[in-house]
Length: 299
Image 1 (cartoon, rainbow, N blue to C red):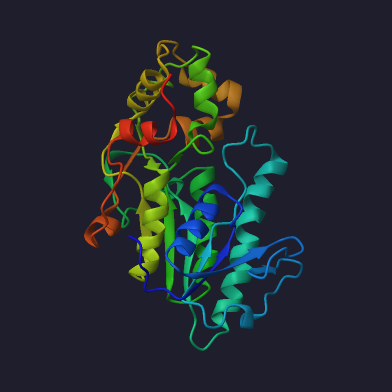
Image 2 (cartoon, one colour):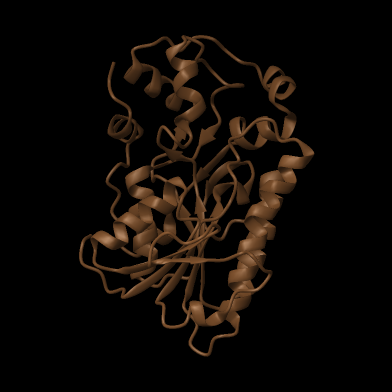
């Protein structure tokens, strides 16, 4: 996808992995991008915000869409009480500010707001589409509050329930050094289904949501079910390292905390990207091996 039907898009959270990718993709397509930043602007396309609890709606006026990708990383360990508060505030505060400003416009832009596949929690009984019920757990509760804040913008809201992104700065960040050190192996049973999406497909999917003006929840996940063991073995093969050292569930919970272990490593949910597929999205990397090969040099 190169040419775009979009004219101007505003991006919050543009310094992150997906944020920078979205900005680069839109600009390559000739779309005017305004970046909301939390520092003194250093370029004409930057606007400072979050110095106050309100954003002047005029900043958003005339935009086709606002993309909200703000949020501290859930991959940081441990989830201390202080960091849990940061996970909440880094998502809910900017989302509420954007939603409030958008709701005051007569012709509001589409709000494309980040969420996560963690919204569903564990759901081992079968495939999980966008109409599946809300799950339980710390991440599910966090995503529930996050999405509710976005809904305050009005009816034109898309919610990106994004699976872990296969990238050295995404889900692979802790796994690559462990695998290179020969410490990879089954996590818990290893049979739990892990949702994931390649970096290229995540960026393309966000563009797809924008171009098609999709609303409601959209699962950003690969279409092929993959177990944790499949994931670990694929990375180990790419790095030519063993995959043999098991980590029992009780040990993961003891070392990393129950919530982190259960929500990030032991979670079991076959997330299906029905909204993307039903609107004609084509995955560049439907297979995990290809997604890993695209971002991890072979050893």
